[in-house]
Amino acid sequence: MANDIFIGGGGPAYGEPQVMLLDKSNRHGLVAGATGTGKTVTLQIMAEGFSAAGVPVFLSDVKGDLSGLAVAGTPDHKLHGPFMTRAETIGLDLQYDSFPVTFWDLFGKQGHPIRATVAEMGPLLLSRLMELTDVQEGVLNVAFRVADEEGLPLLDLKDLQALMLWVGQHAKDLSLRYGNVASSSVGAIQRQLLVLENQGGAALFGEPALDLSDLMRVSADGRGEINILAADQLMGSPRLYATFLLWLLSELFEELPEVGNPDRPKLVFFFDEAHLLFDGAPKALVDKVEQVARLIRSKGVGVYFVTQNPADIPDDVLGQLGNRVQHALRAFTAKDRKELKTASETYRDNPDFDTAEAIQQVGTGEAVTSFLDRKGIPEVVQRTLIRPPSSQLGPIDKQTRAVIMAGSDMAGKYDITLDRESASEMLATRANAAAAEAEAAEAAEKAADEQERAFKKARRYDGGGTMSRSTSRRSPQSDGFGGSLAKVVMKELKGTTGRRIVRGILGSLFKGR
Image (cartoon, rainbow, N blue to C red; front, side, top):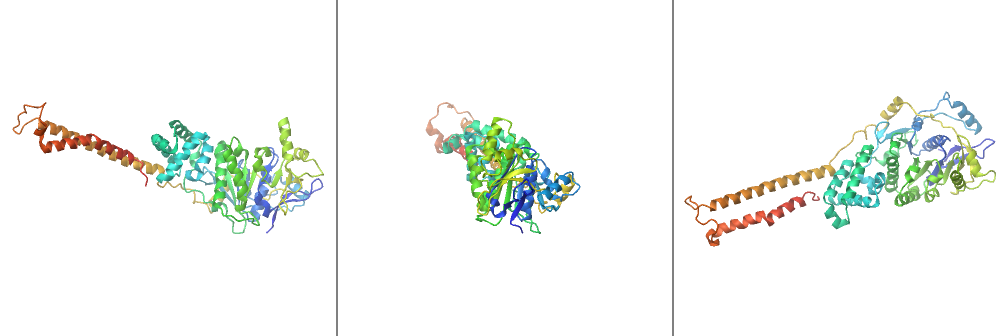
């Protein structure tokens, strides 16, 4: 099995053949370039190379083109001529082949459903997803803390909606314990949950939740599984798309064991349209991405950001991306020229050409590239002709996709949604029990009032059935011990004892386990 991935190069107008070393590919990477410059093909040939080397891959298919990885390319494709010419130019013996692919889809239409629980997503990412303010994020953190203390599993959106209703009803008591829990903040969160539900976000949350090991499978012939997330519909909710991918990356970081410096990655994760992750992101979230990018390589995971301009990536993250493929950038404005200059300065200079000019001049299917050498040092930037893919260029049809899904190991595992008892059901059960107790207490109080009225009425008459002559002024001694005791009991039922019963009912409404 090869220890590198051939990216391209060669020919009289280009430098040495460019390869990416497998034992350095967990040092992350960048694929950048304007629309239509060939990023998708680069992503496709990288996925092919990793799969052939036995490395599983996860990538999102924003335009639907990457589904062709599941089908071998053919000589009669409309780009066959240009591809064959390119292969001859770089000295590549192009062999067409298909690759093991598993299709995923948050909405369960173009792939197997892929879900997370609300508890796994956590308050930080949910706050980002719902665009909450710092104050509202604080209230959401209180809700999660309450769920932990009360033993309320948060699995889907209806669980979180039920919990926020409870938080709103008990805002005063929670404020004394955790700080101000404003009803306005609770209301804002509830409205954002409704917006998220209307955008289809409910499909993301629930069970069975994704088992990370299902993304790290190797086929019987030793090739890594290519996991393709259908994202064309998901891109209609860009914040949902970015938050889901960040959650998945965070889960990999938290769950996978340390492996040091493996000879090849355990998984390669491509984050397409990476600018969506950082646009308007709070500093706390950017810091978390930086931390994950810095540390996750020791877990054997390589992360590759795919975006139009390197300026879309914060400098602290960009500095950790050792393997780079830069397709053409256009410089029509002063801002464009500044960004082009900044992008060129992130490469080791090649004395044979000006990097900034090369980035502007490369055509479709060409790029300037720089990969890490054996010592982990970025190589001198080179102009590179990207190799053609072995699999089909462009999307597959619906029938082919359905056949592949039916034959997948994941068929049936995630297709049926589970709805086990969780926060919403538990809170509803407690509320019903409390309502029954309240009804019983009300009936008992009503019976006590009727007994008191009957007792008073009976005391108005003497033993012979005639009305007592003194009904308004009676000596306390005339009531006797029994009458006095009855008065005390009735007073307690109507007073302190009655209030104690009511408090007991309300206090047990959401009593913990």
